Image (cartoon, rainbow, N blue to C red; front, side):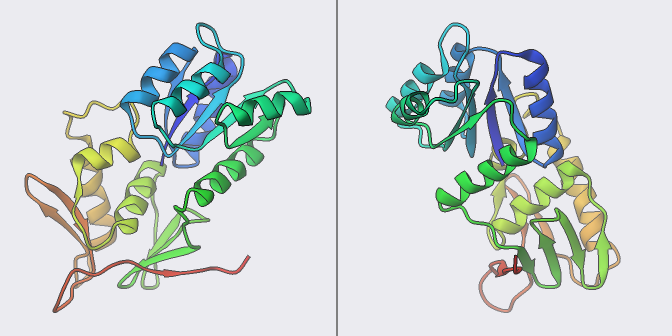
Length: 238
């Protein structure tokens, strides 16, 4: 998933961005409200983390402008202000949730997951295509009894392919949801990562699950005699 992070404190912004990337999120960061609003207008984000105190445009105004533009990505406001009136103001501006500084990073991740769930994009505990199983809580994967060791970015790419199993996923879509603004869309990095995933997922297997549709994109699917397969899902208790 791709996150927009707007925070003027450079050290805090870099720390949050690093933690989000380690949790398999793609992150675009903005040091001020003007850049945050620009990025929100030109990119498709799964969630936005927005500090209230920002230079050029404060977070409340950015939030209002985002909603006026019809952007419905869930917004988590960050602030050192903890009064009820401040929280009401933020929510009335269009925010979906409110987190007071200082905060535990684990709580930030939990609130982001909750916001995405409310949006209707619920991930079950496990996603499965044929004998490939992706554990969305542990960020791990296995094929049959074989554990697959993945880097953070490999996992993010695999999860996106599995979530859209049975249909072609374009390079533009992968670029928008798995990478951030630091990625050059004209590089062959996506091809490199798909190739690495293919070796890890399909290497030594009788049946290949990942295929390339030349000039279009990639597809992960179980072979069937009829129509393309769709990922099955299995919830994990707890």
